[in-house]
Structures are given as structure tokens and as C-alpha cells.
Length: 293
Image 1: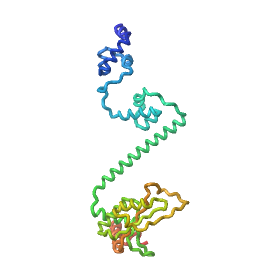
Image 2: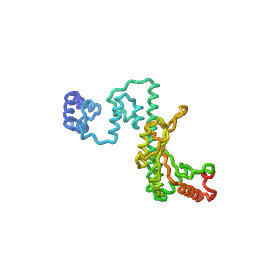
Image 3: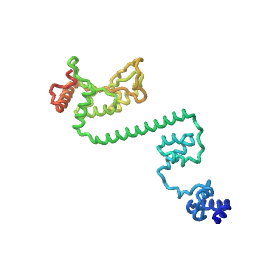
Image 4: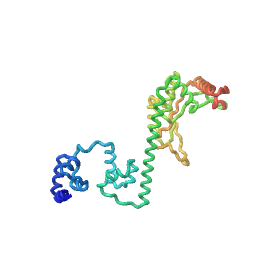
């Protein structure tokens, strides 16, 4: 006990030795053993302000998180806010930022609102990631589509979205309207599978008057793989000021209308195919459920 006390009494001399060893690249353990300083508090004081040598800093998966935590703390974030943002424990945050100045305290109500918003933002991010993952897994389950897959899909797609003949309004023609580029691409691939020649197709954009009409035409021409000059006159839909439209913004491009010329025979076959699909699962031979209302 006396030897330790006499050795620590020359603190400045001991610190000078410790700093010299630290700058020479020794670790805390090596310095401890070299100087026989086994008291952690005193060792901390001896090495205060001296950074650890690079070789002692082992790669850590949390390095990026630690740096981000320090950035947020310098911006005035609280432990609660950093925890919600980064998903790490408060004890880790405390160790990482303990040398940084404390942020200015906010009013309890303001702090609670901010913490609540941060938690909700984090929850939304988690939900978005779950949503993205589920969709990616589901997309991977489809794989390649056979010709029969495309054939059956196209029939159902047309009967759900395409124009249909009615007893009170005979119109046996193939007319398809949709605003989803993926749906349009699938429908065109289906027509190609059926052997419908490109020269029999007519295209027209249907869009609200306040939108970028020319931009929409270029967009749909690219989706369909045709020249925009081949498009027929655009159908402009007038906006009712009493209604609130949600399909606005840069992503709004209206709908693409696709008509198949001389399509009466094709329409009859589509109706027959659909009837066959329904009969195959129900045994009902009364005819199409929608076309004979």
C-alpha cells in the first residue's frame, strides 16, 4: 500500500510516462502492466485526452451507428430521440456521446411531441420495409409466365377492365382503358400472343385538362413502344371544381385507351373464353356473368 501511494504521489511524472507510452502506440493494458498501475480511475486520469492508437480500434458493426448518434447529439437530439431514430439502447448512446455537450432542454410538451413524432416516423419506416420485403418475395414467386399463363391472365384482365357488349347497346369491339403502365404492357403482350397485328391498334390518351398532356402522350407512347405521332386526338376531361382530385402531381399521366380495329370476332372469342373459364369452376353454362345482364 505504501509503495503504491509513493508511486502515485509523483502523478505528473507518472502521467508523462503514460502519455509517452500511449503516443508510442501501446494499449491501455500494456501501459497498465508496464507502469504497474492497476487502478482504472488513476489510469484514466493518466491517459486523459490521449486517443487510443488505431490498431486497438477493432472493426465494429456499430461504428456507423455510433458516428450517427454523435452527429444527432451535436444537433441537439435527446437520448430518446436518438434511440427511436437508430434503434439502439440508451446505455450505448450514453457511452458514445458522454463527452459531448448536453442539448438545451425543451419544454416537456414540445419534447413529448417530438419524441412521439420520431417514434411514428420510425414505425412508418419499419412498415415500409416490411411492405417492400413482402412484395419482393411475392414477385419472386411468379417466375416466368408461360404462354398459357399469359393467355388466361389476359382474358381475365380484359373482362375486368375492357369494354363489354350489352343487350341494350351492341358494341362488339375490343376497347381497353387503364392508367397502370404494367397493366398496359401486359395487355399489349396478350394481344401479341393472340396474333393481333400492330397496325390494327389505335391509341389515345384520356386525361384531365390541368395535366401535362404532351408529357403524358410521350410517356404512353414509350410504354406502348410506338411513335407519339400515331396517337389519335386526346380526350380532355374537364375538372369539376366541387370535387377534390387525388390523382394529381408529376406522376399523373391520365389513361391510355387502346382500340383494336375490326375487333368484333376477337371480342366474341374473349367472351367465349371467359364463359369457358367460369363454366370450368362452377359448371354454370348460362353464359358470361357481366355480358348478359
